[in-house]
Image 1 (spheres, rainbow, N blue to C red):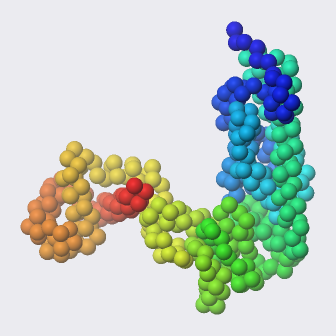
Image 2 (cartoon, one colour; image 1 turned 135 degrees about the vertical axis):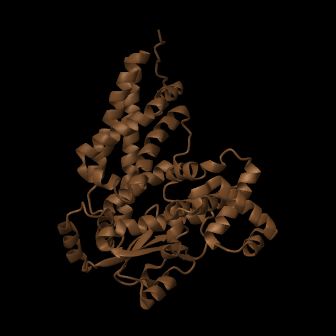
Length: 404
């Protein structure tokens, strides 16, 4: 039978919990985080919308960080809480940006604590926790929640202290609603447009800003919507980027790197920022050249080819099956020759120059490829798919080389 775990009397809020208690709690975190997410979004529907919006990933990370930090402090009371503190302040700032009071966030924190306590009681029965230990756990947990609330309030008050807080908060909320897309009632957007004096455009262009952020909002067009405090800073420019707006954007981005998304109907704004952020990822992985300002429209094929890595694996396995049994070195040479032929349809001499081999070697390889692939090289649809797969694999290899 498991032994009864007793609390230690150290006087510190987390002190009464034995450090070994963390080892018992840690395996519970993944399912507990999921349970809290379900209960909180059921009790506070506004958070369900946010979790499915452009800030959903950041919110989930914050919840995970808050719970993990509690366990870390049990295991090591001097563990740093810098990340947790920052995320809690961000939550508070976000509530202010959204124009809400702190009531919902405080309620969500306390609901999460009650769910965690309920789980602890269940686990406690399995481990025969003493009543004193459970009391210590409850005290430590709610003291910890008080810390989270205090940190979030700091962030909330920080935003409120800004002289133009109300106007900026409404504009940020408007930006978030536009990026949420069609599920948001247009009446909510129309109301904020009226309150902020912002005219809802037919088209928008989203821009993903890369850290460190050095954008001067004063240099942006007056009708731009901006959120530079988001973990993934971004801004919205109404309409396409004409010469005047592009010049203003260039001035504002001086010293800051950014990716300009596609101009899309306003209802599709989330797609524009999603593509821009994906290009940021491709820049970081070395696929796309790192320039001060990158335009999505210059990399549409790359975006398309690398959209679904798992699907690429399936296509590669299917379309390149004829060379699966060939040695790696010969297979690599044959596929590189095939890629050059599909892309250029060049002569043996032209291909030989690109491959840095003798034209006769090219002819020899092409005869081998024709024998191996057969009708796959004459059927237009199959040929197109094979070329797309080879291009995508080459882009992915470039990523691997960059990371290596």
